[in-house]
Image (tube, rainbow, N blue to C red; front, side, top):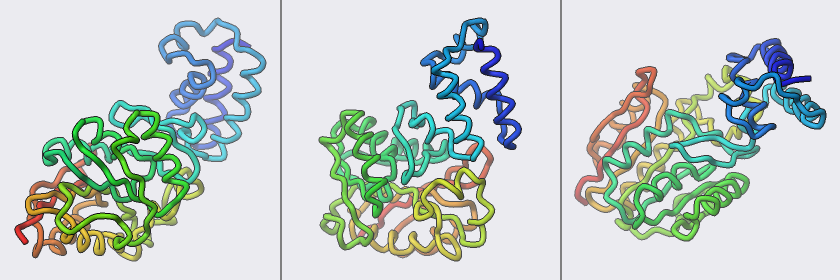
Length: 282
């Protein structure tokens, strides 16, 4: 079998499973297995596809057609141009979450910040890379997620500036009142009524605790805002990802006694996705 046949086989099986962009997905699997760039793969389709890789391709296709996330199969995901290791127990970084980091570039002045619900550690790593003098406390209640964050922070050489904190309650985070310059977070915000409508890759494989936000999606935002009001210095920022205009409007209203809304950022689909809240004077 040559690469052309391997591409055709992979794309056909992926399409039959109802997965969008089957040729792209096929090429990404083949690039993962061969170590080739996609342009090289397409340019040299007459090359032989080794038998040992055929077996690995079949195993990868079995996983993908069962709707396991492609990123879990390849073991990596790009975020802010940086590669991150991902796998079971860890939310796959989304492109819209990059908006959090872009807003941090505009609003953060450096020093100490918390990444609450760090997951893979992609947000913490990207901000630490942008601000070489900064330090981070990366918090997650999931030991499995923290293990991925540890791998990624070590891989990027940033582990020495980041304290990984296993905590499900805010009083267990080692922060003094008014000590933080920024809290940045992509909390679970999917309302309970929408959980069953998630695509299979998400519903079957990604950790529910990183997605489910209670009845209205705001269950974890409320204690987070209260804790942020105690932990941020005057002028510090709370940068949050949320699930659209209605949620963001409610977050602004819930926080208006201690915070002022500095900006709301839409994602590529025009959906309000990120809000920046500035801590008022104590």
